[in-house]
Image 1 (tube, one colour):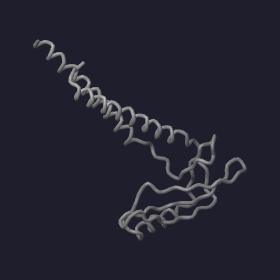
Image 2 (cartoon, one colour):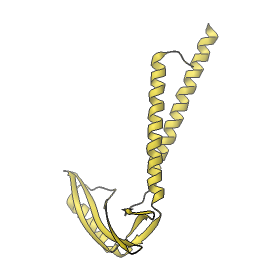
Image 3 (cartoon, helix red, strand yellow):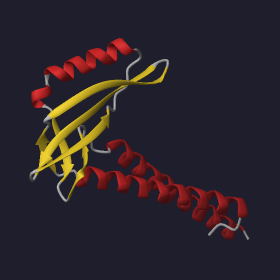
Image 4 (tube, one colour):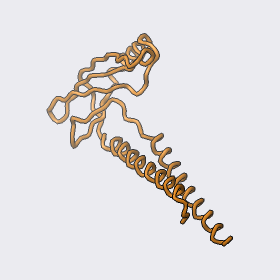
Length: 152
């Protein structure tokens, strides 16, 4: 392997970042996979959260029943809107589909619920490219080291 200390620190930093992001990606996959049942919502109330002057997020507080027990949950919508009126329009569209709205729950722990279940595709793609980048730099270090040992 390459003997340059800075190169080794650089490679170690990339490897650590890759491993940490891989753990994060697997956690996101676990969160996606654990939501295994869909149940109708009994009651839902919408509000708008103003995160900044140009970021408004719909928030849902809802109730659902599972195995004879009533649970409550809340979801911040993944999409945000630039003003309160467009966020309200999105809520109105969701209200019109309220009978079709269902919540995803973890059947082994029904307290865990959400209205949106999205596969973490972006995290998986980033993880894949980080591994490719780490392998590339590792191979580059070995290649440069082999060139240096030949010239000696």
